[in-house]
Structure formats: C-alpha cells, structure tokens
Amino acid sequence: MAALGLRRGMQKLLDVSPTVARLSLRCGTGPTLAEVLQMPKKQMTKLLYPLQELEQRLVPDSRLDLHLKLFDPSPEDMESAEGVFAATARNRIEYLSSAVRLDHAPTLARPEVCFIGRSNVGKSSLIKALFSLAPDVEVRVSKKPGHTKKMNFFKVGKYFTLVDMPGYGYRAPEDFVDMVETYLKERRNLKRTFLLVDSVVGITKTDHIAIEMCEEFALPYVMVLTKIDKSSKGHLLKQVLEIQKFVNTQTQGCFPQLFPVSVVTYSGIHLLKCFIANITKN
Ligand SMILES: Nc1nc2c(ncn2[C@@H]2O[C@H](COP(=O)(O)OP(=O)(O)OP(=O)(O)O)[C@@H](O)[C@H]2O)c(=O)[nH]1
Ligand SMILES: [Mg+2]
Image 1 (tube, rainbow, N blue to C red):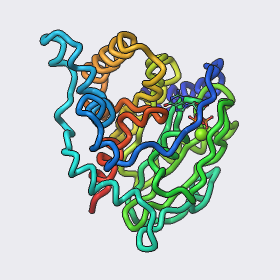
Image 2: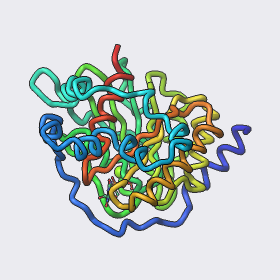
Image 3: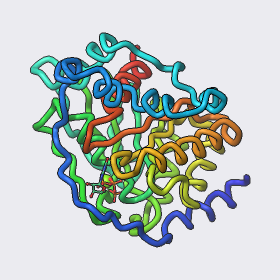
Image 4: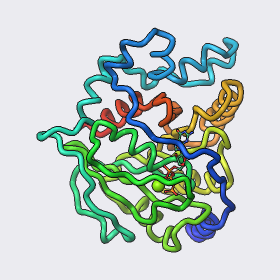
C-alpha cells in the first residue's frame, strides 16, 4: 500500500467508536514466579503457559495450527528473566520521560520495545503488570479510553527501554499519526513492537490498519491478546484460533506465536517477561 493510503488509514485510527470497559479492575501485583511454582500443576500451567492450557481443549488436527513451542522457556528460564524486571539498587527501573514527537524522545543506544494497540486495550495495565517488581514505577491506567496521550519511556536497568504508547481509535490524541507513525518508521533502536489485541473483541478494523502499518514498515512485531480473564474458555479458544489463522496466513512480520495475557489473573505475564528479556539480550 502506498504511503498516502496508509496515512489515510492511519487517520481512521483516530475516529472509531469506543469499546467501553465494563469493569474497572484493580491491576494487582500478581504472584511472583516462586509463588506460582508452589501452586498445583494445573494452576501453574494456566498461569505460565496459557496457550498450552487452551491447546488441551482442541482436537488433535487443529492443535497443529497453534504455535506453542517456538518460544517455550522452562520455569527456570522464566526465573532468570524475572531478575531483569525486578528493581534493585543495581537494576534501576524507572520512568525516563514523555514525548509527543520523535525528536523529543530520549536518545538511547539500548534496545527498545514498544506497546501499541487500540485505546483501552490494556497497554498501560500490561506494562504495570510487567513492572510489578518495581513498585516505585508509576504507570497510569484508566477505564476511560484515550488516557495515555504521550509516548512514555521507561528504563529497565541496563537492558532495554520500554515505551507505552497512546492508543489508536476512540479518543486518540490529535497528533497520534505524526507521533506514532514517525516513531515506528524511524526509531532506530526499536527492537520489537508488541501489538495488543483485545481477546474478547478480536482483531478490529483499526487493528487491521495498525497491522498493515507494521507490515508496510517491515517491523518485527508480536501479537499479545489481552484481558483473557474476561471470556469463557470456549469464546477465548474461538478467538485464539481465528487470530492464529490470520497470523499464519496474512502476515509476514508477525511472530507466529501468540501471547495471551491477563493482568487480573496474571496469566501469561511471566512468559511475556521472559520473551522480552530474551529478545533484548545483547
Ligand atoms: N478484566 C481485565 N481488564 C483489564 C485487563 N487489562 C486492562 N484492563 C482494564 O482495561 C481498561 C483500560 O486499561 P489501560 O491499561 O488503561 O488501557 P490502555 O490500552 O493503556 O488505554 P489508553 O491509554 O487509553 O490507550 C482498565 O479499566 C483496565 O483495568 C485485563 O487483563 N483484564
Ligand atoms: Mg494507556
């Protein structure tokens, strides 16, 4: 698609009606890995490997469609990744700055990961959950869509920088297109983009525009399915299979394995931490 068409598409990201969050949930600190490892096996699998739990409900033929083993760390691997996300005197995790334009973004050499998605999909909540072992870091979340208005940069020790983006769609900031499109296109140390999709709703029209943009800019990106605590297992499975099919057949730059998460149950959070730690490793 030509850049102009993409820009028009991006403009549409700004004016799609809201999906109002029905619940206002406390985003807790979640269990540490040590606590999870004490849990009964079934509960542990559900928290550490949510796709594996879903896969068990599938008939053997459709199991093949899901990619579970591309990134399949052991609990010990997850334990070492937890250190990356735990704030200590030697591993400072902190808010750095906010920017509305790329040239206001901090100049940093370390790898960067960013989180994009519709307003209200759960970007800031997910980042807050990833930082649960850094309780001094303030990440603001809100049940009102369009809460995050700037690109917020967080430093994670000497390892990487993490960026919380404003959402697209309903109540997106006016300068969203210039801000986010330019960032994605030009940020040189951007290592991976995490594109969040609401697992209850599935991939929406505006998500398709964002996916197209990632494909157009040849960004390596990863699809994270949020709010998995909100659906019945049957609905979640249906959504996961549909989204997986889309990723398998319609995308080039998307990592084939999906990452379902919930900041309420903490399901999938440790796995995602481990993945981020791995891709940002020097
Ligand atoms: N049930 C449930 N609710 C969630 C989850 N994650 C986020 N939410 C809720 O979704 C709403 C929006 O969360 P945010 O994290 O602020 O969403 P955002 O994507 O940062 O939104 P913008 O900053 O407006 O783009 C809040 O009410 C959260 O409590 C989840 O895993 N489960
Ligand atoms: Mg936000």
